[in-house]
Length: 552
Image 1 (cartoon, one colour):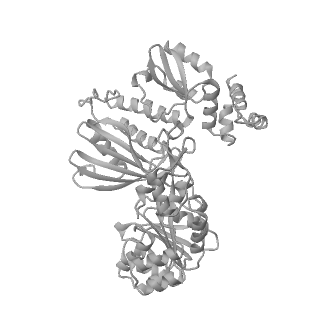
Image 2 (image 1 turned 60 degrees about the horizontal axis):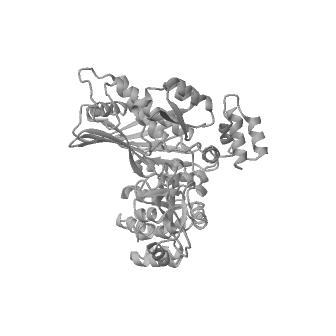
Image 3 (image 1 turned 135 degrees about the vertical axis):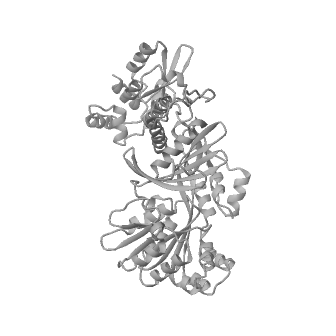
């Protein structure tokens, strides 16, 4: 039987031990394959299984995200058959039917495919979730576009829309839902819908990089935008001015908050949807990418009974994630924590979270005034946007509260000058500010395929400049595990500046930025660039990634 053969293969390739196999067979559920049991028990990863199968059987792994599936081959095999056996057809070459499966040793499926199609099947292996994603993407989109009267081929050259048909809301609802579901499957943070002359592009931002995932005929663009506007409570008759909206929905058992923005362009309305996972798991301070020294400094900052801790950086640099990690550390029944956020991204048990509503004048400043009458110990403010919010935050910190917030500045020292530019008295900043964390996000190298290499002359020059000794660095390569991008996920690089007595003295004296920088360096400040280079040395990321977000 195929299940036993998988166990034998994994034993032969030394991926698992006899004891682990016996344990997995004992724990295996009746409707579960052995490979799924081993992954569920975290004995092996799915990629380790596929690698072992490739080494033992010669069945090649394939990246489905980068593979263009021939839409004609989808009509040969029923969608339910694909879902039941977790396979997807890829294309036909001569008399061979290429298909992807998560269990290439299940020869019964190959035989069924031969009988159903008349072609000789050739199996490739791919992770189960990748196959499910492609089934949703291709079968779902194909059905929906056909219902809309759109004939689809790969290049979209022959796509037409039957304009005599009345707009059928149901297929368009399905199309928008499939775009959202596909984005969630692929861990996208934003969805862009861009009108061009001949077509509409749907792009997902994954790990900070935009990728085009679908193309639709321009004729259905307005219908798609109208559906999104209806969902988010916008005025569908107004197409000349930008609009903002919001959708809260449940996709793949995840509660999502979608922030919608429309922008009129010369070719039509562009839409960007920001995806916020309200059911997201809470990060711990030790898991966000801080070095041991940086983690120790941050913990000392938030351990103070009062004062302000600011997290700075551009939009999308992970500031809110750091704040939530700090709140998670501080959250216990003995303290009263109140937050003011726009939006509330993750709901935390035991924390009183307030959503800003400017339409009813519930701004950061007004909410903060009310919070101070709620006997708080710790206050988290989503962002210091104006002088009023900054002044109230400083007053709160001086009256015995610990205040956490974010601010848009390029580095830790510039955060101090930003507060001074707001006309806040230097002595108030010096007496209230506890510390500043400046941060950026860089893509993390794929652990499956990154390779060691000697540093180039340019890299050596950069490392020498910061007195970092490096013998080798890692390079992005690309494999099925990371969809041939070479990177998988993101990690933070940080600049942590505790406000010491020496810094307080300079701030109170309104010293120039150059003196503040000199003092910080004398106290051992590790800049964002240095933090990034340390992660390059450790093989976590590449110099190219660090240079994109950090420069000095």
